[in-house]
Length: 319
Image (tube, rainbow, N blue to C red; front, side, top):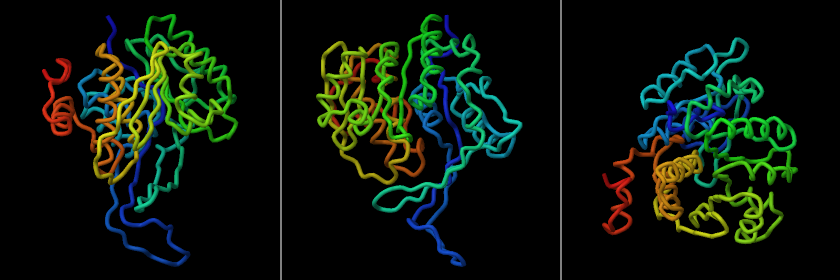
């Protein structure tokens, strides 16, 4: 028996969300804004919070500073039942902070990586990570850490866990083709549309998915306002997005990941998992903060009932 449903490995920081101001003040200028809010941030952390809210047993592996922000994050994790025993405490860096400006058109950030810089794959205690029946990995950086990432993936597979990975944006701009080698060993491989098109060098997402299907058996691509698509065992499935008013898109992709993997870990089909992912992403954008808008399983059920006209839901969510 595994101790956790899922262990999440990756980044965690503080998000300071500035509401009502899209520009950094000029030298000597003071600008008053509508609001400032403090939330837990970092893609892996937002995913973990959303998955825990849905009722799964989650542990988090990352690095925090020995400061009040680190304590705040630990308290937030504990509030939702996330096990923090795998989190290390830095003796060098403070907890990372990202200042997010939220204009009407797009977001911009000022970020300090802080203790996240110390998360090294080579230092992970894989026997402890494998206490989860599923492990979600983030932090892939292409050629820079491909060998280490692939080695960890292979070792975890040998320990009998299922794996998911969200590669995220490639800051190097290379879009390293070694990612396809990685896909062969991942049970659910997640990315957004722009990332998928960059990696596959294709112009249409359907073509990109077909290309990736030659390497991975289960690929999921987030399509923003168009919903999401998955290619599993050569079968393409799409599900449209839910129409909601967006307040803050921070963490929407991570919330989608949580909804999709909630379905996957419950043994549900691809179409239902896509629906859960789109619903969680839609709820996420309705509030400031990356995980504030995500709901528990009962909230997910109510959301789907409102948006699907009372259609009967699978037992996994209707109970």
